[in-house]
Length: 275
Image (cartoon, rainbow, N blue to C red; front, side, top):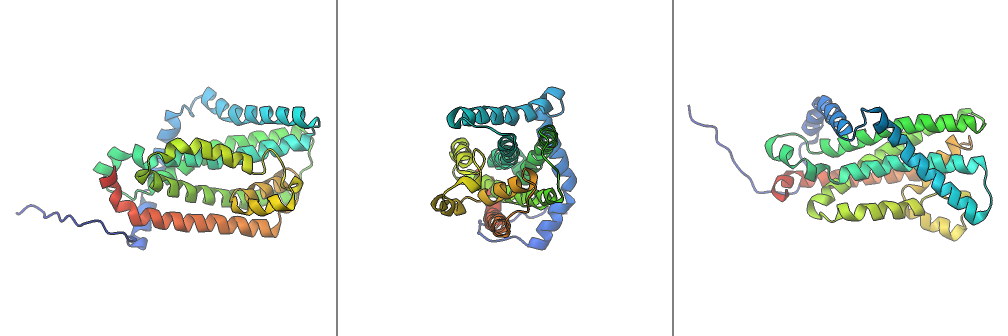
């Protein structure tokens, strides 16, 4: 019996058969879960101190920022701290997705070179890890909110679709930046500065209602702005988010996901050569 013939074809940008690709991705959902668990174990998330630091890190950061706001402005209130904590926790969900996703392809070099699987599983796993990290912080925020005596309302349920939109946006950003990092490795070193800039440009240290109209116009180019403002309105103030902000958030997340996924899938077959 003759040996099987292996044909090597030159790379050509283009989408793979999507139905077969999605079916292959779904069939490996168990691998995604186990791969995510291994990443969490590597970061000591399975230990008490690992989970405690996961909450303490953004909580202490919010305390530092709140102290600076009090010193600079000379005023403070519980609602302001609740806003700062809630939005910072959600920002960390996106931040952790980007930080984990940026090196997800390059870090999985041996796996990519030796195993045939949908490469998009790697940035997807990074987002799964970020979501698992986020869930304890959400519980901590609800406890903080209760201790502050802020009233609960049905409008807070708007946080559920806002969270889903945020995860969808984080997924699109993770997929996009993981592909970019294959071609431009310095993007991983530049990412911390980009995230810090995004932190200051987003309604975290301040509320959107305090901005001047000219500044609000510039914030339309920030995909996190409508999400964080809607998140604060729902969870902190117990209000219905602005319809325009919700539609803008959906448009940003859907647009980034579609463009980033197309870019990733069209270049995926070249990754082995680039790595």
